[in-house]
Length: 179
Image 1: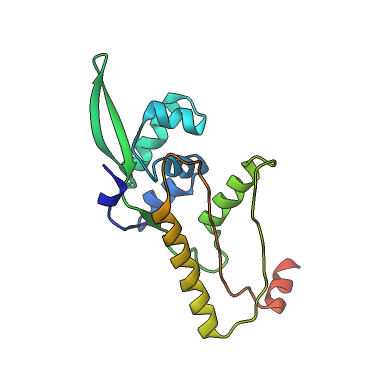
Image 2: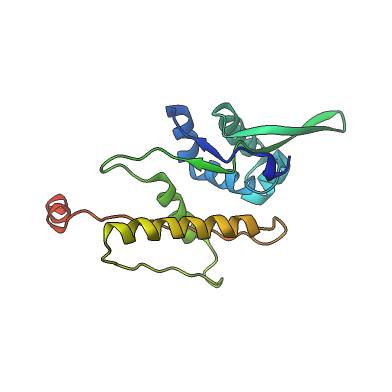
């Protein structure tokens, strides 16, 4: 099943789905499946897990509706299943005030695990924007990410793009929480 046939978004709404995406290993499995279907053996090789562990995590993702079987084939009398993402994008619920942002935690973990000698572009910028500029910048960042997702070629090496545009907590509030 090519990714063109996938629904655009899948909204995480249940606790089971949130637990499924909150695990770093399952997050990495979903990254493997973002462009093309893969078997448990292929997933295990790409993520660096035993086949049994990969199978366990894929079953949890499948039960939560985040991945699905898109094709099967017989291999030496055993049915091999190929899994794909249930949608092109997974939309997580707002973590709420003070709640951990699962996506950012996974992004930091992936960044820390990435080879140090590889090329990276990591930057943090503090901006002062009008509300209109804030909204415009958010839309431009999302459009740029969508544009490059459309250009993605599964035969090329993975690259991850993560951005967060937000209004930080007021300085007084942050200082009070630190005490």
